[in-house]
Image (cartoon, rainbow, N blue to C red; front, side, top):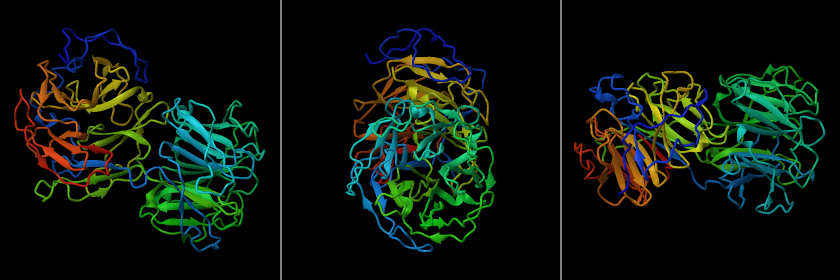
Length: 588
């Protein structure tokens, strides 16, 4: 009727060492096939290992209960705010108020300001990661000074998702903004320069790119600015340890201009956003940061010569409440010769809600922040990827190399952000899949990836045992077809046999469990069409997977597992809190 199970094991496709997802299917299958047992090894671990029965438990606080992790899209997501410089001298906040532009900029994962068209007005450059493998758009400034001076746009090419950093600066010395891009998957981060070709009405970056060094993945922030005052764009970089570096332009305009560097202080990890702008009006690039509390600070350029840290002058405050923005841009929008700021309402705070099963009104009454660096991701999963018993975060950056996976190891912190350790790379090409799920599908106690591709095929990527590098390099296994109609897929050991079963929330509002054993699928009672978020995890602490759902009103519901193994185990529900409409993702 709805789905059929295969009579034989699935075929196997060989992939290269990178184990990049592919949409190629081995052969046609029946309407709906699920073979999650295809990669299972019965001898890999004892079946009695009940603690591993629920994949990827979200026990962030270490109390044995599944905590909830949500992504907060924030207010006014996608709007641009223009903070016009009011002329205040150094030492005073130059951006005390803002105007909200019309238009929706939420689609863009890259936003930059520069005079691309050569008319003396700042244009917006934005990347749409979902179009043409990364389409770059130029929004010319119309000079109106109105609520939206960027009403139209011009394409600047496609396939820009190869790069995870796109910056603008005059590297070639012709007065036009060149593109500086970082390719994270090449030689630990290769920097490329795309020279401006001089056009003012079309794509200005059609000339051949040229190489500007490797090893640039060390940078967590990159911003071009003429720090040395020679008329060329130097590169200001913050590394993973919080040190700031200046890479002075060496004068060459056809080869790598960044062959040396000097220090500009340490402790810059206090900044959640860091950029350069002439806030003081002296023609030199100051450093502007936003700290964790949302306060803005200006570090004035001291005028120091090249080779000396120019940011030793005491900083001064530039206002509070900047936590509403996930992107800050600097440029003279108002045409008065002073650098204005633009802020985009943020789309990616992360919060941890420790479980308190006895709390009135729901099990998650309190929360603590787990960083504001998650706006880039469009897939976020929890699982013990490093084998230390703690839930790590797996995030997909859809804008980098057709979908780059990153692993954020858990540090063990239980009352503050536990994912502050350096992330590590887990492969590219993951934009070819429309659903990612973590669970132990091979029986070795490690979380494998179950992926659904754009054709509705299911694939298992076995964990290779690595705890500090890409764990999914082993040949993938085909595990089913016909799954395009599923809105959400989850893995949980519903029937208690020690293997994760597939929980399928269909777009038609039905909910099903597909046992890994091959038994007939079980339909879960009720109408689930009002459910827009679904998670599975052991919330009640009895070793069985409960369901947590959110309805369209923003109310959260807990569906405790009642112990049934061959019939619907979620026959009752209880309220678990209201006001959850802000969350765009919910993990257990």
